[in-house]
Length: 419
Image (cartoon, rainbow, N blue to C red; front, side):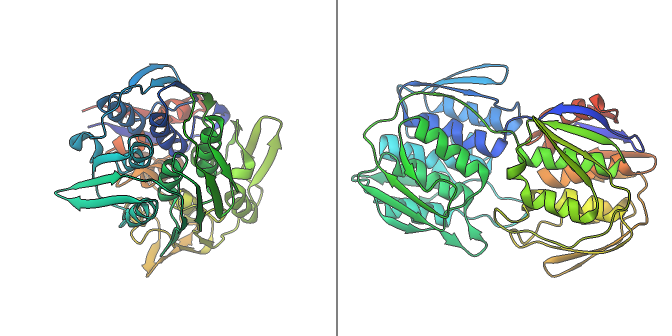
């Protein structure tokens, strides 16, 4: 099992090109099932989750060809029956459900696996698809779906923690080939939802209100193939921006779309970080005086839950008290005990972590529990004195393309050790 060995204390300097957004690429690949024409996607990141999705598409009958960051998919003949052992390995695989129902009016896919960061039910996915006229039964670990007449409907998709990103995308992908008008109220507004919607529009879908909480979808008979490029990954951008600050370095993020990161950049500005917009990206460095800030995660355009753990590392290094409140997932403080192992002073009170910053960190062996927790541990290792070993880095390979190579190109002392 691979691990990272990180020797801390190296300032990061240089430029990196951001990879494509995982949370756009996965549902976009699934959306290629909606047409028999060839679709060409560019800027597709080389990630374990993406490779799993390509295997799933092939198991459904799609022809897949990958060259670098470009993927060609042709789905002329499909089966609605997904491979149980493939699909159950990755939560994001549930996004094949909407396209299969839209294209074939039928689907049989396994329930997605559990998640260490908290309960992530698909009840809102099923609610929306049932509203469109799909009969759905869940038994023996499978979601069995069949739609005789797929018709547009007014659907409310709000949940306990706000809108559902994948649920919005799943229902939208089914609705583009349904009869009549579908209205999704309390739709998720994340940039990845917008990206998938714009991809569908390029294929010939009729969607209004993209980027707003109310989507209006007029069903069409058929979609066409198209060539499209995935947006840069805003979470990778935030992670490398924070890496620059915690190492007292200076990094330029090429391709960064700053309007996707407004809440993160606002908090970094409030903390005293220096952020300069460039024509094709963003330059980030540590400011002269840093101060602690409070953070509450919220649905977009609020502070993203996927940056909470990385921002916590910065707060650990700044003298003062910071309160970080998690409002999206109930168990997303799995990284806290590992950060304490490195010397952090953090206590958990309900949905909040109280961080007493300024003590500094020292290297130690730590273990990643999930994707963003592993990114936080890497940042902590970069800032710590001595050597940090981060084990179970397969988590980070799910969402960060060659993060160790990118960090080394900026001057980090990080090595991947296999064994």
